[in-house]
Length: 85
Image (cartoon, rainbow, N blue to C red; front, side, top):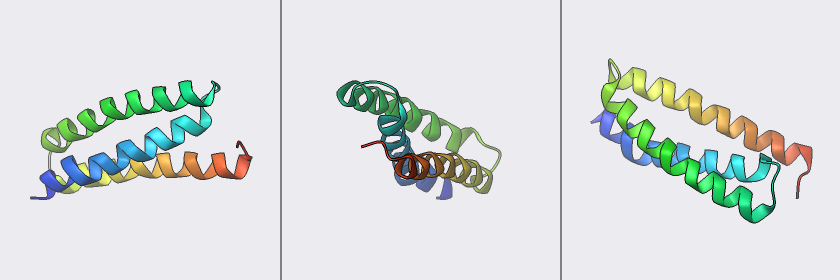
């Protein structure tokens, strides 16, 4: 059950966080950065789902996904502090 939770809602949330972080930090126009962030998010969502079922345990999948999501949150937070509009 934990693997399914990591694969679906948590994976979607992590992908969304990375899409937001990339759209704010990529050195492109806003439209290009947003499109690139969304395309990368599709890949991230698929990779997290595959990782959730390939990991040794559900707890390990959750821990690594949480660290990966935390990196996205940190990047997003620093982009807000940096002041990019």
